[in-house]
Length: 85
Length: 408
Image 1: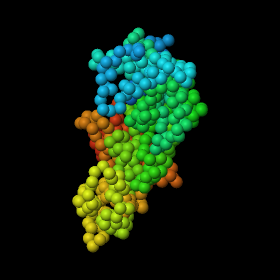
Image 2: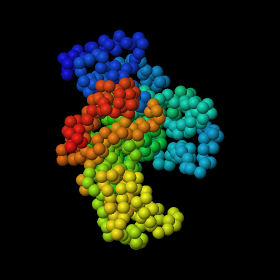
Image 3: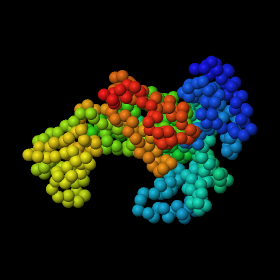
Image 4: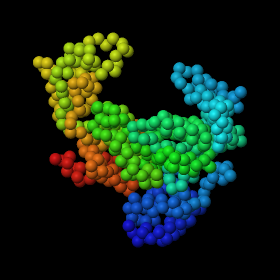
């Protein structure tokens, strides 16, 4: 595992910086998009760290039922935009 | 009187088959009467609105569902599929109509008590509409609101010892045939392997790991009762290395039309008069590789040329049995609507031992190698079979322990 991925704070910061940069055009991303942030790491390790970020409330899932995407928690489509209170 | 007129749906009830429309109407009526005094946690008329929105879709020729969402239960990236109606004013009962997938047990063994408990929970916190089972094998609970999801999950995991299944870019709930629990043809204990894989790969089942969905299915023998070869990214089909076991006395009983030895174990008896059993016509002549002969009251099988089609064993189960050195073959890449149409799995490993004593090491090694390759090389929303088509079957990684074994 690279030093960047191994350091929880640094990894979170790198992810948030990358997502915020893209926020103007997109709010949901595939897992594979995160590979670019951690080019020296194996996909399986990246998956573990990104899923931990969801557990920590930094990111959230969006699922179509067949595919899952990730976004910043509270960004893009939310329950309220589906008409829910 | 029904809340919505449904003339188009009513037509579906006139066909010769059981109709989901009739079932939904019965459920709508049951909820309206509420003879059991259930304190419904979602709108009482959810099923009536469901009928209404489906009718409208038939009328307009397009869906009125918005599929997907951020809904889920804490810590899980699968098991819940968000669904919303784009006509909440007309059909408020189905404004949010989420699906939950329930991880079915290996072999789909339930007690009636368990099913009753699950249905009671679903009547209380959901629409009461279920799908037994979805094509992945899970029990599908259709229709509840966002607020109920955590409550249902809590009851399932704390009171019923029941987990959710897989959805999204996760490993889907592994699915199998009854295996050795009921079937003499099964070459390995499919139930035990499903149980192991489900526990071993919990993280992959509950948290998205892959470019797209990934399915395991396990058939105990080449009869393929769960059709794993056509329905899963990775298919485990029971097989054997040695010879088909022949009981020559029993073969002759079949030939002599002994009533205690009916062809196909009597499975087709009574449907029509099949006439006396004819070994030549019904077994030898139908062997796809013509590797059998019957001479001087003795049956011979050229096992090197047997493709394990199971036909002879199915027809004469008291005379022929699977070999004793059993294991499974692993096939990869099946998918229904692939680029060039439906694709069956391709044989990757002809034989691998199924050994619970070493935690199925040989099998998990193969799985993890393939996952690593697919996660690295697969494009977004590209199934394993599509990656194989794009890069070539030769690129599929197989652990050295297996290739060495095959070369031997």
